[in-house]
Length: 478
Ligand code: 4AD
Ligand code: MG
Image (spheres, rainbow, N blue to C red):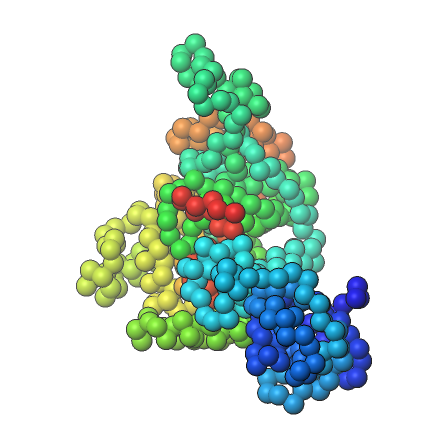
């Protein structure tokens, strides 16, 4: 019984009459005869057929949803609708029982909220099977894209003493005791006694270290977990999320935008190629979900059409200043439909504004560039106007910001001056400044929020449903 054939392979097979063994979990058992078995190798189930009155009734009773089984029998052509092949059962072994009274997943529709509470079991539903397969394929596609282009994959540290974004909101990493924290002469926590001899945090971004790598390899990327302690309880923020951060020497902002657009299109195309069944399933799921919404909130395009639309169109590029003009003059703004009205230049864009630009005005992905320097990080290259920086944000329909990046300030004197203005201690970041001292070059990079990409490709509306075990405010279950 040790040789098993994967269901993905079986469903494509035409070797009728061959004896095979499948192992998996029971999805349903109907009419005391038809067992739908899934092993996760694909979205589909194999139907195993028990001949009536040939099996022990007590054994059949144990064929409940969730039970694990090993089934051997003959592969036959199916006469039933919905499948080409089925398995005529010869022997059936229950590997693990599953008490139907206690098992939370029943063969019926469960809400996403309910399944979130059962995140340890939700992989066993078709929806999450599809979502996490797509997640895998997107991750693989990203590595494939960069590998084909000669980028070096760089592992930047998870624990760090620097705050890349200069924005605070970090989780502290410490082994100091809470009840008797050592204090220095001034009464402040004495981190000299801490594990690393200094204050450390979980990283919010691998960018600064990636820049160091780019100054040797020219082209690097990171792909790892990042952590933000921002208390934003939205459908698009997680406290632990995965980010992809390419960093390229000799690239300017235009090259950076092109790289991001090429990468996004490449991985979306890859998912369409590798996951046709999963995406078809998710398209139908989304259509069902949207039936619950009022007409005007439903999307004009279905999931697959939306993905193809994204591939077939150039992303719209415009500056922050142009975007502000569009927003300020929009009927939406005049009729005071924005929660935050656009009054003048300089304000940070809220997600309602980003979504207006993408979903109502341009109706396609948008790249905004040249933001006011005061709302962006210290490392962005300063423009001649003295007011803006070479930043770019990519905004996607239904998602808002999916990518944030910039050309970096490679001129030491400009960078030092900006850091001083923003009260960022130069001595702590001496290693970062060294790249500007020793053979500095123009360079650029960006960060792609991996979960936001998965949301876009799968059509799932909540970030909690595209990462296996989401970490959000007041939630770190599992
Ligand atoms: O715009 P952000 O903060 O940019 C950076 O961290 C830069 N260091 C990137 C770089 O230039 N190398 O974050 C990048 C992306 C966002 O566009 C968004 O997609 C995602 O990361 N992101 C989040 N995703 C989920 N939950 C959160 N709390 C996120 N914060 C940012
Ligand atoms: Mg950003």
